[in-house]
Image (cartoon, rainbow, N blue to C red):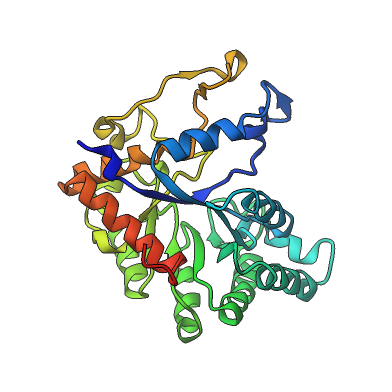
Length: 304
C-alpha cells in the first residue's frame, strides 16, 4: 500500500494536555516533547490538526498553541462537564460573551464551536440541567459566527438531538466526535446532517464495530482525541490494526520515542485501518473520502 496517498486531519487533538509536557497526574516524568509529537504527526501524513478547547481558559491555550504553526487550528467552547464554570467566577453572560469574542477575534484559527454538548456519564462534575442550559447558550456562538459545531455526546443522545433539532435552522452543521452510541443514535445524528467522528474509544466492542461499519463513509471523520482514546489490545478493533509504533514507559522515556499508553496524532492511521477493514473498503480511498469530508466542514473556503 502506498501510504503517501493518505492525508489526515485529526479533528480532536488535546495538545494542551500536560502529558505532552511530561507531566502525569501532577508528577513530572520526562521533559516536554510536544515538538517531537508534532514532528511524528507531520511525517505520518497529518496535514492539519484541530486542537480541542474545553473551557474558556483551555480554549485560549489551544488558540495560542495553534498560532505557533500554520497547520494547527483550534475550537472554542466549554465541555459539558465544565459548564459549571459559567456560574463560578463570573456572570454566565460574561463567560459566554468571552467565548464569542475569542472566536470572532481569531477567525483565521478557530474552525469550530466546541467542545460542547452533553455528558450523562459524568454528571458528578456538572448536573444535566446545567449542562443543557449552557449547551443551548453556546449554540448562539455557532449561530453568530456561522461556524460548525464540535460536539460531545455521552449517554445523552436523545436530549442532544432534541436541543439541536430545536435550533437546527440557526446552525451550520458539525460533527459529533468520539461517537460510541448505537445504530439508532447514529441515524438520528445523520438525520440532522451532522458528521460522526470516530477514534479508539469508538471501536472498543464488537457492537461498536458494527455501528461504525454502517455509518456512510461520506459522513465520517476520524480523530485520536489524544492523549486519550488509543486503540488498546483489549479493544475489538485492535485485531484490524496493521501499523504499530515502538514505545517506552513514561519513566524510561527517551528523546524521539513515543510514550506507552499516551495517544498521539500520528496514531490516527490505526483508526483508518480499523474502519477500512470493517467497512471492507480500500484504505487509500477511504482516507481520501474522510479527508474531503473534514475539509468540507472545517475549511469550506478551500478546494484542497
